Length: 256
Image (cartoon, rainbow, N blue to C red; front, side, top):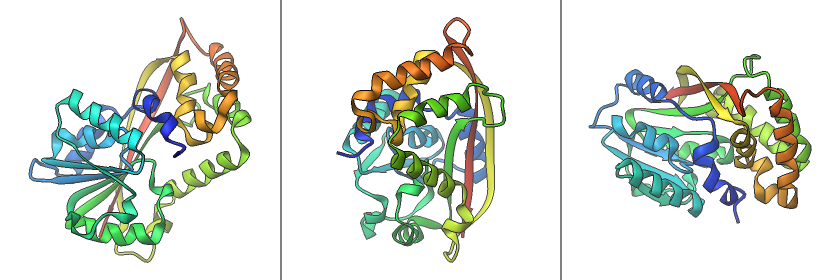
């Protein structure tokens, strides 16, 4: 079983959200229209694919985890969007899948094998198309004073090798010039949108279960113990059971 199979039911509702302003800003930057087609690699429950759906005419989502694809299928039905779904890895997409005006990738690039992925991207991205590497995360500049202790609490319960792996993934996600070096692509510009909201202490604690290094599959019988530790830390920052959170949503645009 994939380590993300146990996170599918939580991922859609508990991960830091991409706000509508984010999709509008990226769509404007790329000049998207209903004539455009988008494929979302590592789509998970379809957060990016469905967020961009109002701005394009055709969307495809790709993911190796059946539980994630089922979550995406349900989300698309609720939203009233047609979303074609492919089970599999980005690196193994069929050569006849065609080309797309936009290839979007969330926090999944570090799970992909670099050389095969670059070869697939060369086929997938239309001549004047773009790749958008997207992420949405709590601001790390001190505006979320609960964040360091939150991460430390889940680090204490996560298997060491998985936490180290997650750290490598974060670094890989941020070092796009290194990932695309020697290829036909290079990062050109970026979009960043900041939003603030409140989230319940229990929901913020349960968000830890959506990360591979602290998923139910990774933690096993320690799930409840970790949640208690995280909630205990968050309580001192809460007001009426709610936590203020500043979210940064980013899209790094990569073109030929």
